[in-house]
Length: 303
Image 1 (cartoon, rainbow, N blue to C red):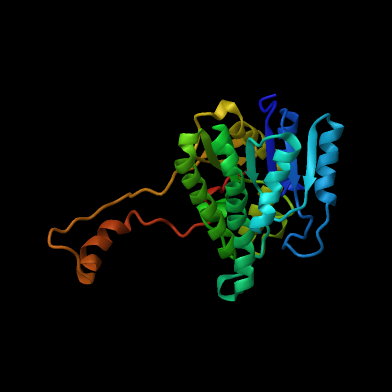
Image 2: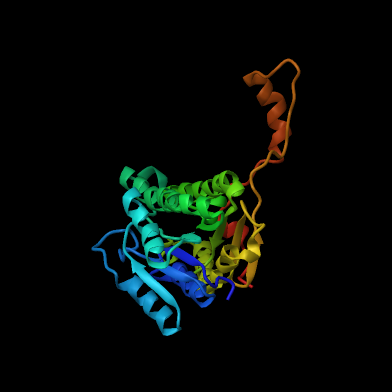
């Protein structure tokens, strides 16, 4: 019961990773606001409470406490209502899990402004809106934990996901900024890059043999494998953990590095474009980062 007495908001909890995190947090003793708008993978279609209601029903069957919420994270006012429901229902809020997301995969030169704005609106703006709505409550009570879902598509790279990759790398930077700004109030903020075969990942294009092999590996990884890490990061056992990026991949856990300078060059008289080409470029070239993707870095089968 690592979360006994705590109140959690889990966005996008109508299925997949979000549902498993909500279930695990309820099992660990938390009262949960299960947020899900019930839309399609691309964010289209009528809002339905059904996915969220199903998660709440499972929690109730297991003896836990949960309520459903169908507000959109991508709107400032509705994000405020998500947090308000937690406070109004349970009296306070202790945990925010920013998991809600959609995909609009498209190769960059064909990506429309709408495909860009919609994905960034849910993933990045939504993470800010819900986090900001909870921030004042966390500040006043001197405690709180944020768990944000980032992705190796942003941390490493992937084809056809400029919108998703940019948003997810932005989420990692947002988490670090929250950790820096809110540390003095006893508030923590961390990221998880989850690996799981779910409704979202099932739309990943797989045309080449390498892409098909990557998808086959991902199908072995079920969403609930990410939940223990989320529960830990939300608990008091992680009271000294903040500003970090983790990944959960089947039975593996990873801690990610943050970008730091890796080589330097100095020229007393300053630099010209020509001297950069002649001196700095050869010095740096051996340390250039490869143009790889998540599947290239995680090339072994899930353990």
